Length: 63
Image (cartoon, rainbow, N blue to C red; front, side, top):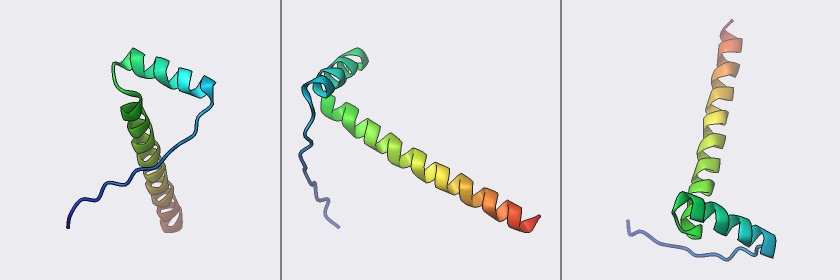
């Protein structure tokens, strides 16, 4: 299957843009890459949390 790139626009306040720029500069990456990493981390953490929660529920059911 062909890869399809989708684009979207996010509106930030001036303060948020400045914070994003400063953090990206500290890490030596672009602002866009910092946003991609943050999004990826948020999704991964949520899915890990969901897995852990499900394992705990299963463990409780088995005890």
